[in-house]
Image 1: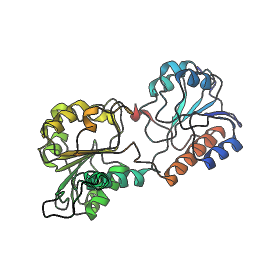
Image 2 (image 1 turned 90 degrees about the vertical axis):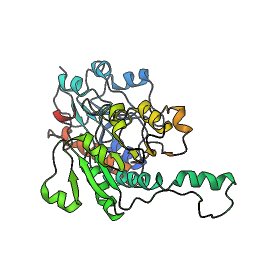
Image 3 (image 1 turned 120 degrees about the vertical axis):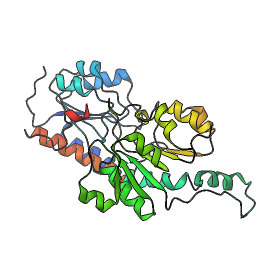
Image 4 (image 1 turned 60 degrees about the vertical axis):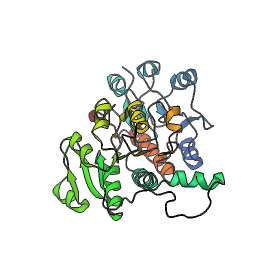
Length: 331
């Protein structure tokens, strides 16, 4: 087991370029090793980075698995930059007494905004229209040109009604969508009333009901391939699937098959199962809107995430429990 005593000036490794003000603050507060450059570290570089640090600040592109944790004898805190922790072996960290923290809440509005943009973009064929204008093939307005579907009056099915799911629901109501959701635990009645949301205890029932389905669960053992081939088959042919959460929650091969066979009307995707690799068949489908994992990509959100990382390290270094410690339920 590693030495779990706190230290007033911990050795901190940041694995990837963060906003300047965040990097400068970390450098001022801690004995920091900052990796500059917007590329992920190689496996060998990551092993070298963790060999002597007390605190590791990784991002979603770093695989912090059991082998890496075993190669970090001094590691006491993994202060993740981001809310999702599916890239960290939480059980291995827990077994060695290493605390894991994340940065929840600060990206809620950014991700909900991106989700709403995809919900609008796919039925209204915005990406197709933009490409048509750029191509020089557009010859002006016509009654039958670029017809899509309105979203007002449609049923939005939200899979996962945490912070982001609730923020999406609040936005969607303003566009005239009715709100349906599936969650492990039902929301309090007062919150359901505020969001005008209908709970579906059975996910299959939600998928049969919704006109648009959007995914907002963390990726873990329970949610991996949650929207699998069988569940995709439950959705009606006019349904649009939106995913700005994690690619591994949706069976991508089954999704592409359904889109190709017109068993789904379209999809809006900000994440993929084998990111950054994308199935070439998806690239060929005009009724799929794709964005490069940018749901949380705002200047304000990145800085706020960095501030949470710093707060978690400082609280730990001062001998207190970090405010954003990841607990058992994430594993």
